[in-house]
Amino acid sequence: MFLSDILSSLYALQAACGNNVLLVCTGDGALGQRVADVLAQCGTPFERVDGLFAFHETVDGSTVTAALRASLSVQQQKEVRVASGGIGEVLRSPTLNSRDRRLETAWFDPAFSTGQFTTFFQPVMDVRRESPIGYECLIRCHGAKLYHGGDIIDAVHARGMAREFDCYARRLALRSASGLLSKGERLFVNLLPSSIGVPSESLRQTLETLAASSMRACDVVFEVVESERLDDLPQLRRTCEFLREQGFGLALDDVGAGSATLQLISEIRPDFIKIDKALVWSLGNEITALGVRKLAELGHHFGIESIAEGIETEDTLEAVEELGISLVQGYLTGRPSAEMKHSWKRSLHAAIPVLG
Image (cartoon, rainbow, N blue to C red; front, side, top):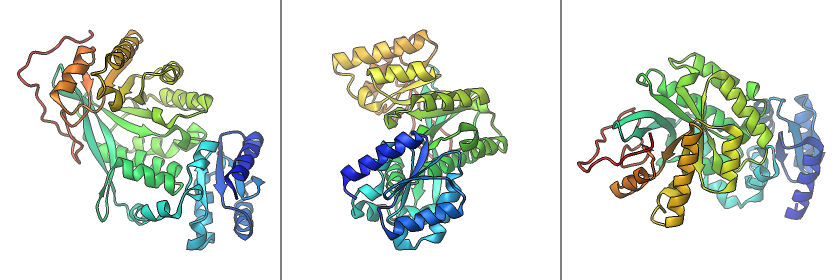
């Protein structure tokens, strides 16, 4: 299929089903018919336009994915990907990318099937008290080499497994952290909004894992990834409302200084905003510094705490403190580790006043 044909098919499916669907991209022909047969055998109502299939997220997507894997050859599986709803997700799927990208991420499938992923913890430090308020969970993979978060996220999207892996990573984080938090500390866990369908169903396993741990919902802060640029704000709102009803905290991750950020802050009213390291590293620019200051002041006015990411030098730390930010995260105050630990102490220079 040409890209123009794919786009036409996607828009037709979106008109029929909306954004909140699972999309299966196969190309056309015999493989498409085989996928149609598998969906029918699963009892899954679907819409089809050429080689694209869509069905609502209320249907168990993991069951359909498992059935496709069991029914298709290895070669056929290379040509089929399941993506969360929305045109953007399918446009990022590997069926529209080069074979090279699939080959580059071939390490992922055996690593996932054999459980080679682990959770590392990076402290979120309160520099006034020289102690952590909590730890962010960062996923790592110990395969032929150590794969970090960026490598893993690229592989997850390349192989069409964002929904399945996001759930897996959340549960792994909760299991790994059980019994490790000190009193008053919180666990920051990343969450991809597009991986959530009906919140009560998509997050059921996460809630079960939490119930089996030593933590309560109020000990956990879910970080909504702002850089994902989710288009479906009503769905984002439903997901965040559900998480709040369960007692979880919310953070907006990778925050910039544009109007889209302000809209997201207004929509979800997070407990924390995590200011993107690209902004933090550009604080030498007067306009950037002013934007970050106003963002922190806005958050403070509404009871939202600001966390500066990417703190790697004393100069950067001083720069964010001058803007009234005392919560930081970065290599200077603590590298990711398999254990929850920190040893950072402020240098002998005088502390700079922060917003009180």
